[in-house]
Amino acid sequence: MIKITNLTFSYDAKAKPVLNDLSLQIKQGEFFGIIGPNGAGKTTLFKLLLAFLSPSKGFIELLGKPLNKMKRKEIAKKISAVMQEFYPAYDFTVEEIVHLGRTPYLNMFSDESKEDCMMVKKAIKETELEGFEEKFFNHLSGGEKQRVLIAKCFAQNTPIILLDEFVAHLDVGHVQQLIKRVYKKNRDDGITVVGIFHDINIASLYCDRIAVLNDSKLETIGPPSEVINNKLLKLVYHADSYIIEHQDDHKPQILLRK
Image (cartoon, rainbow, N blue to C red; front, side):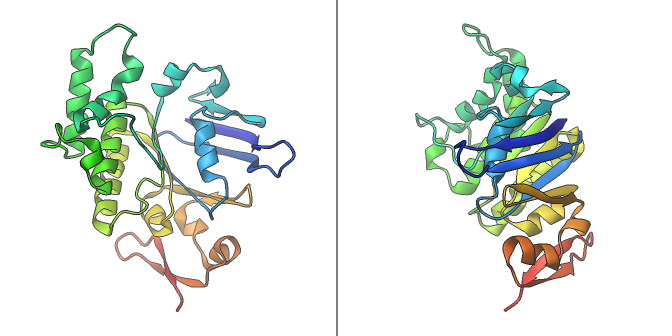
């Protein structure tokens, strides 16, 4: 679904690259996590995947096609995203925000089709936003806003969804509800999900594979059971911790030492 080859990016040609010679592949239907310390280049990588930035070197392929050869509307039909910050210019309602997900399928002067309305209604139902349609987005809680943005991605109906720390700063209940909805979509519909995670334990529980970025490079990549260990946490995060197994699926979970 996504192939990254020898990707290097720098905001300043004279400065150290934010990403340096990064190569990885993400498979169809995978729930793929990206973790790493602050400043490791995680969000920059997402902007490159969305073609908001262009690589200094190397290239990205999206579904077998060079990303730099694709038009903006074509990219928007293949990949949707929830970024860290979303500030609409106007105080849209929940339903209007979700309808924005159908924008790539509209012509300049065309009205929404029955299919567009059906996809919006389905997305609202999948994210349990029924009854919220007429509420204003800016009046919602942080968790509710993220649920609306997830619904917008579902309505966009892309084979790939990118999530940039979409559960950061939320309480544990909202985190669990949001991640379960995305995980269900991933498992039921085969949607490829690529998420940046601040919470390593959440990434470990839900991701099939995890890539660890550190000091502008790919430190390691693999299943959580192979990636999450004390040595890595010490090297990458300088954290003193120990690992336990989750009692349900035996995925590694981190506990910090006192």
